[in-house]
Length: 221
Length: 200
Image 1: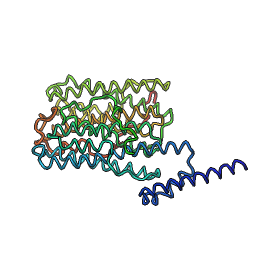
Image 2: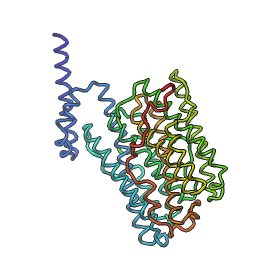
Image 3: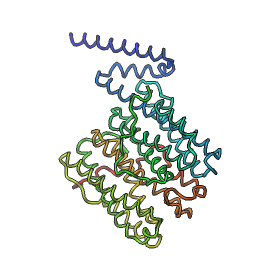
Image 4: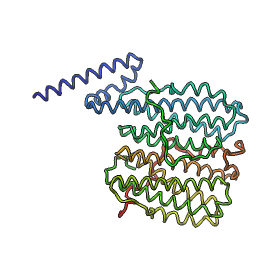
């Protein structure tokens, strides 16, 4: 009987906590996301243990970091395509335009997939470019004067993406997040390889994917 | 392909299967290095061959180390199903030259890429997940580079296989899109996890 009362008290406390966090998110301007996912996330939160909630919070932080980088990828390749097409780096090579268009599409699809998982975990989607790296892209791109320089410039972002996904793969606990991250990471590594070729560098530098350029989870905050 | 997590016994079998695939890849690249069709190709092809052989050997060692840490037997034998499938592809090399070399290499690399990706999705332990994931990205890079070389050779731009390609404006757009056709790594070519298990 005592156990039952303790269980009811804990359930009530969790429901109140959930209501408080939902209010905070709504106040921050994310009412739509809260409405859409209130039921599923409420059920998940009520049934979650403190340990599970900690895992979910960590997964959300990791996924937001990855989504922020993917959004930056969409933005950066869009800007790069514009600059190449305008002839600012010489006659636009069709192969570079095709590659950049496709990679931009990949990053958009990755961002969508990661945001779907974020929403399922009860978090609003993260739709802005990574604020920590945004300025270097915004300031650095206009100084890029050739396709080779563009490839070198793009490598910084693609390395960060590939290595962040690989780091996340080992730290995530949600099954869908693991499966999705495992499917995205190698594709970013492929982007890296082809960029190395255009940068005049050997395309496959390591026998094992490194993680020293993975972005900290504090990036999107 | 299931994405259910591996039990410890399943993970051991998966590691042994991965090792058997790495053995095939390592020996395949080593045997390709002295081939006339490779020596006459652009120098980057030979450099890639040597580098990929070293990568696959490093993968084999790391996988067998992981098996040792689990108290399981290492796997040094090749995956015979893949070896058998590779035989007719290799027989084409003397007649077809570099395109056949690239096709044979891609046959193995695409299966390695898919297998490591699929296993990284299923590994329950973060150490094994990190190992499969870390290798999957490198196999993915091998695949992309080989596919780009394939497009360049098939379109008559073999001389563009250089760092960087000297005449980018002449290269067909397919060389920028065909190497990485999917936004998400496919796993349909992944090998069954018991295929290369010791005693399996």
